[in-house]
Image (cartoon, rainbow, N blue to C red; front, top):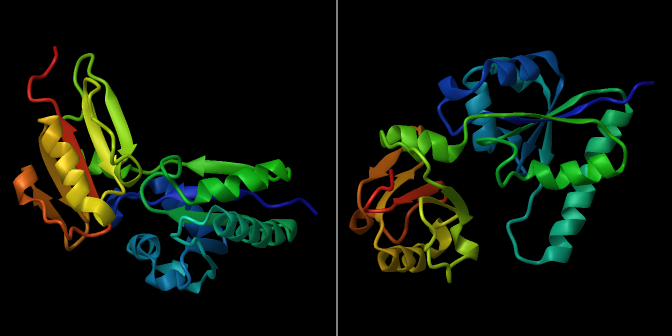
Length: 232
């Protein structure tokens, strides 16, 4: 029996209309859909996909538990467990579509499973989606980079000692849990700062300056920090 293929599929930032045709097609054509979280139907990625492919509710939904902790041994054990679960489905000759917010190549939980699958000889394919920072820039009507500017994507919660000193535009992801410290880092940088919370979702909020950003911003908060003097 031929083994199935594992697809890592980005469903975009939140608005179902921003999901790609290819993502919708793969969900429609395959029977097994993996969703990060303990309850698939409560996951944001599932709700996005259901807005375009309502028949996803009738698929075999596989919850993939991804603990949000710093214990690397625990994380690795859960990732290996998830990979073995996926491999069992692939061994039965079924394809599996793992849906994820944004794009599967950017800080994506599927990446951890992908490494194990590929090491064990399974076929993996990634299907791009609109990334959160591209969607956020579009909502702000803000070009991310122009001419020869550099783009720096930083997981801010892990880089609180970062000086943001490189030229170009900084995108700060994973900022919400340490927002007060992140704001202080941004204030020292002297950059123009804007933020989108829950980009393209129903409860989306736009913040046009550093002073507007609350310390208790939600989990899906993304900051764009540009130089005050643009280099052209």
